[in-house]
Length: 248
Length: 122
Image 1 (tube, rainbow over the protein chains, first blue to last red):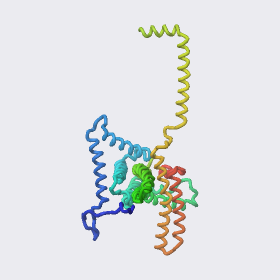
Image 2 (tube, helix red, strand yellow; image 1 turned 120 degrees about the vertical axis):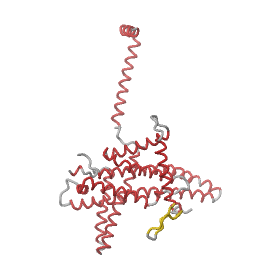
Image 3 (cartoon, one colour; image 1 turned 45 degrees about the horizontal axis):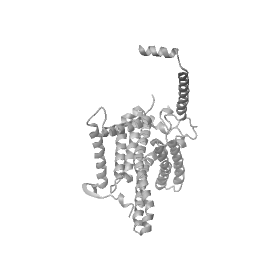
Image 4 (cartoon, each protein chain N blue to C red; image 1 turned 180 degrees about the vertical axis):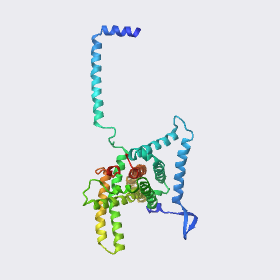
């Protein structure tokens, strides 16, 4: 009945020992490998026939390509398409991991902050490194808005820097918190059903309410699983747009 | 040839029924035209729909942006207090600055403030 129990990390076997720490293959790693396998199988298997009129699986692959490509093009321009592999990988990985977590008895990888923070930091560092490589010191003009009186410019610049630093936090916490809270809510309401069911006949009647809510919440969680992957991808596009010099 | 001949024949001798029918077609066409125009002006193709994923995505974006700004401000303030021993001033100043950054984040996510772009500063 412990709603947190589902997020427990279990070590399966130790891969290596580095600096006195065991690097173990955990259930989290297992589900990441599973998600990787599903996405690879979907993309490679579906496109192997290369039919002019796509079949069902090829349609899924083509639709997901189109979806991410359109998102990237609309928010980062056609120049952003060089980051398509990164954005597409992030989107498909998070989507696969979220949907895998919706299957009963599975583990949800994105319910751990360390995973989402690593993904967000990957994007954050890509933006900084590519922005500096592409624009040089000109990149720091990102923090200096134009048309601001000189006497409040330092303050505004400082706030812009803080806003920039807060990006990976909001980027990662949003995904983590939505998935974690959703799964806990689902578990709590599902537990109400068994608790009420144990209370006799009146309990059975009362258990209809949490059962209905659990069904509704499951549908909502599927929506959230997709939307959070989408939000993560679209924010990646928006942040990458800052690194790419538009115009010129 | 036969069709042409019949068309010419019809045009020469339009019956009263056909005149009434063509007038009704014309009225119907006009009404359909106004309907189409009304639909076109009522909702632009780019306007967000109720089921548009990007509209829901924008809603999700707003929820964490403010908190993230405040957290970053509080974290930097706490670190400065710890390193420089100026407690509580680092926390006070940076919490307020972080709050301002959080509000900026939210306004940017909501599209009230234009996003910061390198091309704008040129």
